[in-house]
Amino acid sequence: MKKFKPTSPGRRQMTVVDYSGLSKVKPYKKLTMKVSSSSGRNSQGRITMRHQGGGHKKTYRIVDFKQNQLDIPAKVETLEYDPYRSSFIALVVYNNGQRAYILPSSQTKVGDEIITSANAPLKEGNRLPLKNIPTGYQIFNVEIDPGKGGQLARSAGSFVELSALEGKFAHLKLPSGEIRKVLSTCLATLGRASNLENNLVVIGKAGRSRWMGIRPTVRGSAMNPCDHPYGGGEGRTQRGTKRPKDIWGNITGGRKTRRKNKQSNKLIIQRRKSKKKK
Image (cartoon, rainbow, N blue to C red; front, side):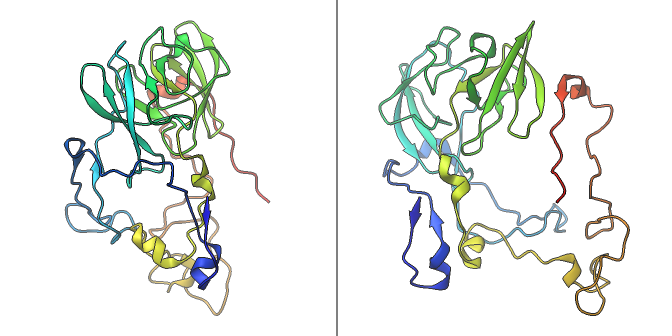
């Protein structure tokens, strides 16, 4: 982590990730595209996701979450920052000349060689089917459906623990504490996602949130009665309703939102543990 001298109130507590280990290059142009920002509005112009808007201009990098070029070694050319995700990305060049952006492990360095193969050595950064990974290993960028691409544990420093192999299924312990079954033919990358220090970042000031495209968040209890179910009253008042509600009056606290008849329910062995109330 990088800290600053307290030259201002915003600098006093501010911390940023140390990017000195990244390659000082521009993004590979053939693997970039423009993504227009909607500021949380739908096609009718109505806000459907609050607290979004503004922020610095960003270029989207096309990341290959599948990494399905089997048995073709690839060399890591660069390690780069990606404004659209918390983990770093790596530009790799395969032996057949193709280039792609991938999610590297925390131990991956420029010049390393990685491979996606059923017989790949058990080295961090290599990608192989779950059935060929010993139990107890930490993995990330894990597929839920074979060939669909990694969907689990893609954010900075995250990982999934392979707890068991049973028939055609593998048991995975997710960061949330949930234990679920996934087909053992799904691919996963060994190790943990890069940028382990991301959870230690201190924003420091409101302006930095605005650079990131995050607009101010106002408490419901600080609003007027016409704006929120919790609004109004003299001074700091109680909630005034039996259950926690959102701005539209929908019950939120402790209510399960998952569909009861969802097909993948049978693949969940243990649900994530609820937060303990103080």
